[in-house]
Image 1 (tube, rainbow, N blue to C red):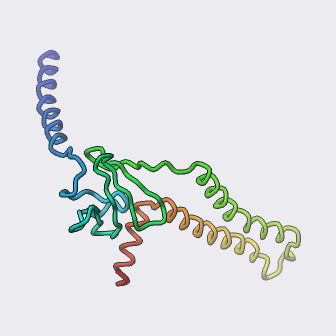
Image 2: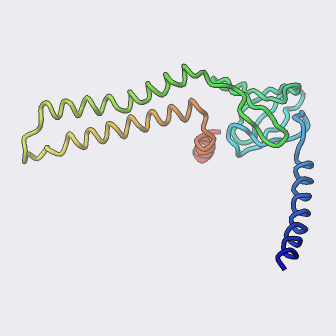
Length: 182
C-alpha cells in the first residue's frame, strides 16, 4: 500500500515540476529594448523603453535607466547614487558593490549622531540634577527621549535615502502623488 501511494505521489509531482519548468522557460527572457520589466528601484512600477532612445523609464518612480544589452544590466542615470542591476532572465540582482569603507563611515556617523546628543544631555542632567520633588524633575528624561527619537528618525531617513530602500521609495512616491507634486 505504501508503494502504491509513493507511486501516486511521484506521478503527481512530475506534472507539477514539468509545468513549473515550462513556466520558467516562458518567463525567462533576455534584456532588450522591446519588453517591460519590474522596476528594480521601487519594485512597484514597470520600466519600459523610451521612444527613440536606448533607455528605460519607470512609470511609477520616474527613474531613467540606460541599458547595456551585452552585460544584461541597467544603470540608473538620474540619481546621485551609482546603482546598477543585472538581469538574470527572471529578475534584477544588484550589481554595484558598495564601497565598504564608505559604508562603515556612514554607519559610524549615524550611530554617533544618534547616541552622542542624548548622551551629552544625560551627562549634563546627571552632573547638575534637578531638585528632587521639583515640578520640572521629569524634564531631563523627556528631553533625552525626544533628542534620541529625533536623531534616530533623522539618521533613519538619511540611511533610507542613501540605500534607496524600495519600501521607502514607494511610500515617498505615493506621498508625493497624494500631495499633487508629481
